[in-house]
Image (cartoon, rainbow, N blue to C red):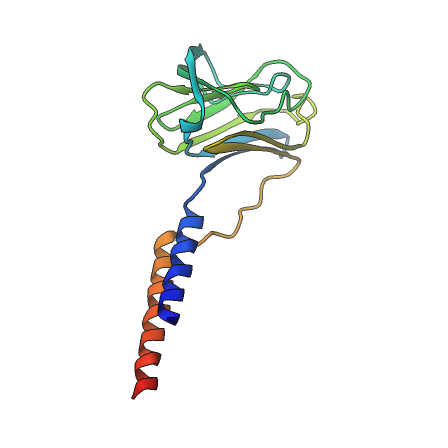
Length: 194
């Protein structure tokens, strides 16, 4: 009985740990520059395809909630359940330095555009603005969320670099822990019968 309970709890922990991906965008001030980084995979199954669009370069436009990681030529997705109308007051500013892995995306207050051919890979973006501050770029400190039924994007604008969170256990680690506990329970049950 205890063994079954431990296995059930372990499986629930594994499912909870893998159930919902979130992309995180951090924009922050450090040493006279403003940095931005974005990381995570996106599940667009909860969004409606809405055509295609091209963006030319990595930039931000706080007024209109636009965030572009690089040249994007891809599919537009619509129908967020919630999205900010803006995250500041200024118009378009291009990144002085920007790099991504294989795919780029553009995020606005009502649409997400992702390079054609995207199939759930992890995005990895970093960019910076030289000799800038959040105020000079018209960025408002805060947390902004774009949400839809299958996923979400969270943007954090802060005055200091983000603190790395403690790592969450991987599903394999949870399975190993659960197997060990189940084995311990079975051994104890055998010892009690003897």
